[in-house]
Amino acid sequence: MVQPALLVNLRSHLSQAGDTTLAGGSVLVLEFVGAPELAAREEGLCLSLTFTGAALNMPAGTYAVYDSLVSTVVVREEGERVVVKVERDLAGPWEVKKEEGLVQRFTLYLDPAPLKPILDGKVVLLDPWARPRAFSPTQLLEGVPTRDIAARLGRLLTSAGAQPHLVSGGPLPVLTPRAVRSGQRCDAVLGIATAYAPRHPRSGFTVRRRPGDAASLRLARLLAAEITRKLPLPLLAETEAGDRLLREIPAPGALVEVGCLSHRVDEGLLRDIDFKQKVAQTFFNALKHFFAGAAAAAKEKE
Image (cartoon, rainbow, N blue to C red; front, top):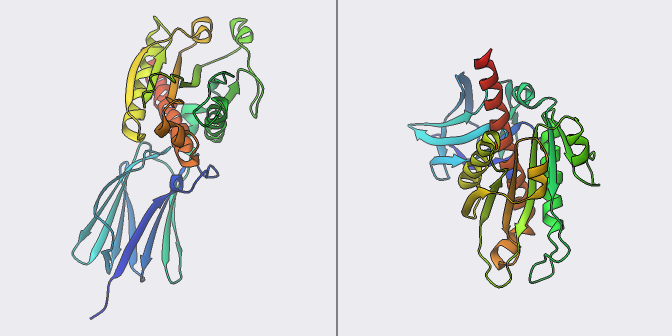
């Protein structure tokens, strides 16, 4: 009797610490012990990969990915076949490459082209907080994780054709609030901070929005939804912001506290590369949905 090839591992590029090289699109890798036959087809937004002569050596089920293009991956066994369903947010070019060896790898590449019409040319102003007196119990300064997240988000936005800027110096171009008030383009503002509460630390995220602005409310709700479904810490609140920058700049804006710097669990995560990459990806997803919704609303008005 011929032994089936065994699916032993499924991973996305987000599982590789700090990998932003291909983050504009999506990459999924399926690893088999053995050599199955692959048939791949497109079914609307779903990509169906059927491996004949294969069986599972990992749990069946639905795996949450939520990267730039893929939402979930469903893996199941049907007789002598393994079926993998890749659910996408947007349709676009894709290909599967096979790498033979002791472990046979099938790598699914999803091109970032569908993101360009949504994000191309969009100016996003990032404001990573760096309060000198905000630090963790082990002296982690607030600016270390917030600037890292902003840099990672900037690379994601750039790969999709957007134009990320920083309020002050860093790895991205600078766009000052005064320049925006003077008429320079700004499509969205995103502040990145931490909660600092050494006496009463509370683990989780808080989303704050520009007061009295419908677009800012929609952005904040998208951020809250993405945080809830993708990140390990709870969403504590979604509320209006007292932040001066959000009040002064005439653009949709939100401020996210990416954990509590004073909490031991949150501090550990804020030092972790994978966590910071996932936070950046979460913010990218929310901005993607925000600009896609704005474009759809503009078309309806035409």
